[in-house]
Amino acid sequence: MFLHTVTMSQIDDDHLIEESKKVVSALGKMFAPFCEVVLHDLRDPGHAIVAIENNLSGRQIGDATTNMGLARVKSIDFPDVVQNYPNTLADGRQVKSTSIGIRSQDGTCIGSICLNFDTTHFAGLSSQLAELTATTVVQMPLPELLKAAGAQEIHNMITNYALRKGRTPGQLSTGDKRELIQILNEQGFLRLRNAIATTASALHVTRPTIYKYLKTEA
Image 1 (cartoon, one colour):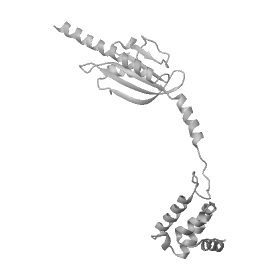
Image 2: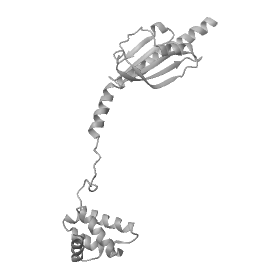
Image 3: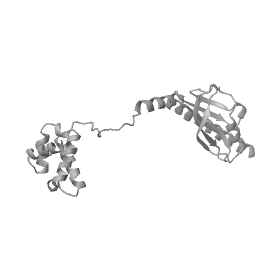
Image 4: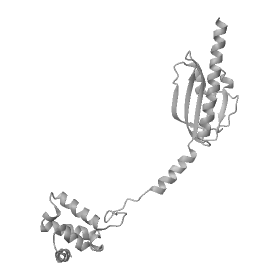
């Protein structure tokens, strides 16, 4: 009876390892060519590697497990998942690694799936993107709107100014209107087609009044 139980347990463990090969193959194809995916059968640490996709490390089927694999075998309390830790390939390339333990029904760690993601290409790309998207801090004479300004923008400027004063555009004082005309002029809005007429209408003043305010500011 005992021998039968051990045999059935071994069959179950073999099945887990075989099923894990599907996961290794799928992950390898998903993240090719940047991610090496390795399956370790930790029941035989000296010949642990039974599947490898996108070989970055130069290891082969039948090679021994790593020190982390040995640690999984020795300690039942070893974490099931060690996520996103820095690692280095034999040729010096930097990788981001994740190790996932595979346990049998009795809790014994019989295998692991390890992913080693080569970050070398992306580190260079990140540097290039940072350079490409960098801006220079300069003293801007005014905030630039990357769209064609028109009557609606003038109305928005006037309305927002009036709201800050707690009034409607028509209720603005003469001093407020002079200040607003100066702002519109400095930001180039009054150079737009029909801008004077639009501004005069919004402020409930005449066009000559707008010119008068401009002349006064000049």
